[in-house]
Amino acid sequence: MQLPEDQIRAGHIPADLYRQIPPGTDLRRVVIVQEAPRSYKGPIVLTLLVVTGSVTVLLVLAFLVQVVAGATIGVLSATGGLSYTINRTSKRHKTRKGA
Picture (cartoon, rainbow, N blue to C red):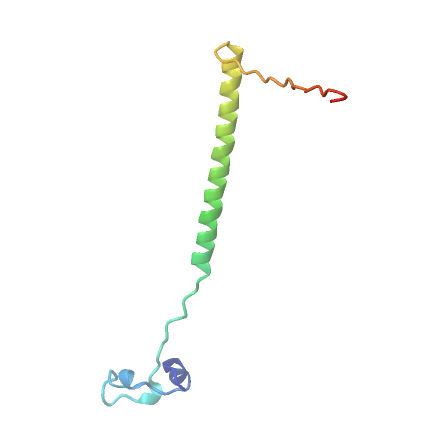
């Protein structure tokens, strides 16, 4: 029995608690209440919810920016305020035969 928790479970009263008991108290009727061990379930779930919410918000914002940019390009090109052309002409080099 190395730990105080082991001593309390075995019914022994540690010295620091023994000094706090008033004289004349029947030690067979003394009940020592321990605090429950800390649960990490709540903080872990909260962290996962925060991370998931942040990722969701970022994805929605990225989607909205894409939609707004597409709509802006469409409106500006329809009103003549913006022109966008793609030039896909390819330059083919002719090879000389016999050279």
